[in-house]
Image 1 (cartoon, rainbow, N blue to C red):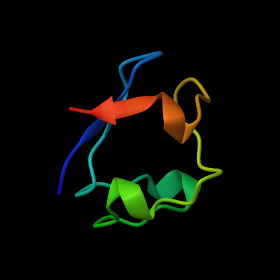
Image 2: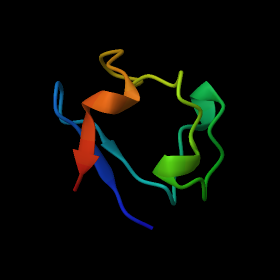
Image 3: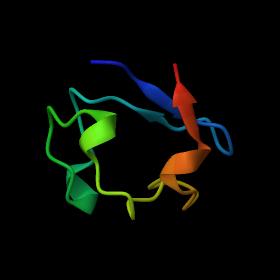
Amino acid sequence: MKKYVCVVCSYEYDPAVGDPDNGVAPGTAFEDIPDDWTCPVCGAGKDQFEEA
């Protein structure tokens, strides 16, 4: 699975790790994250991420 990076703060979403603190289980592809999910570091929306 592909990693994605927040263009605002450079946080990298790694699907192998997920974002369990915000309800995204490990193994969740970026495309499968709910649309209302935001960057856990800066709060940017999914539309502010690009493929790493």
